[in-house]
Image (cartoon, rainbow, N blue to C red; front, side):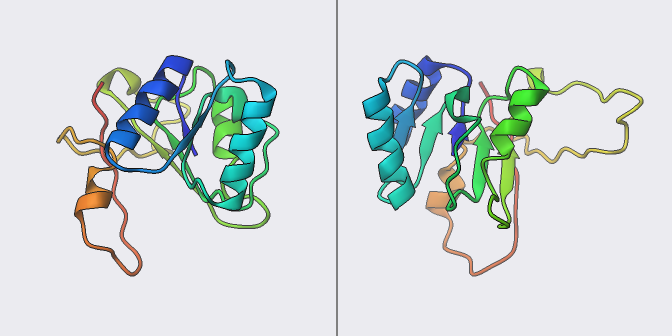
Length: 150
């Protein structure tokens, strides 16, 4: 699941992903309930493996197959962050959450939180999924983080 903050960003990112031959679906608040149900059925069945959405799906959705949550945009509050990342790794399974950041998103930690978090970022602006398509498949291990530019 990929979370963004606005309906317009859902549509923009979905177009970008389709232009790069990724199969993905999109859900936001402007879709009626029947449309959302069809999209969720496709996502649950695996016929759509990437779902781009707003916080409309941050709560109350349980999909066993979700093991990766990407915050393309950081949520506007902590509670939504917790709910977003809680979509992955449910039902006793492991999950990963990745946050794409811009320089505007990064601020020094408060004294209370200093030393508790780390930030790994590349200085090279890259389309976030370019590495996945260009690199040969890996069998296991290894991880990396790229800094998103706006």
